[in-house]
Length: 108
Length: 217
Image (cartoon, rainbow over all chains, first blue to last red; front, side):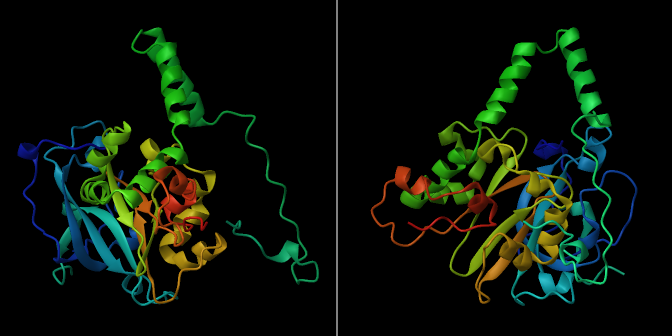
């Protein structure tokens, strides 16, 4: 269960559509909404969706505040799966919370 | 969609003659979460927090939602450009016209065109636009669909009989957080002048998930 949160209890947005981002290659325990397959990969922000209570906190009945900006990020399938058999232009869009994103190239 | 094991035992001249052990029926025993649901529901009723009628009405309301509602929304978008613009800009607000309240989630509509084919999956669980399409089909919740749609979407689509041209971009939407996705299929050709009611009959649940095209007249 997640939810829209008041703007005044939100972390400021770091990214905007068009920004190149990488998903953190992190493996914390708990209820995580960032699938393994996308961690460490780089894509482009296509939508800034506003801020939502952090599901990693909500899962434990905590308020999930301050809310985290949520983005739709687009990846090239060939970037995710090097042996991807479909069209080179095929893509995947996925919602990623800001605390899982870094500017592309800054991920070690 | 095919089950993942179409090998060996279906080909009797194959080198692996073993049979899989029969899968036990699981519909006659309650699992952990089924027992928990019953316990919590009985507690809520016992403490007077909800009434049995309210529970029944909520179940009936969910059962009443189905592809017909989604199809009406799609057909209106096909016939009313101003509505389509609102639907694409803010699906959550636009579907209020149909009495749909998205609750804590938001509706995000993605449009199929001659250059992009969208398909929706939830790899983590079974997030689905229930408020406009009702309960998801069983295959949507299967591990097979969830894992393969992000990895080999064209192969999965082909199993649904949906062949997307090679020069059309396949765009998979993994529904991981607060958005719920509805695919706006391409309006079939040969439907000029059709009413929204006629068009709605061409729109299947699968077309609004993106594993099928709208029916052709």
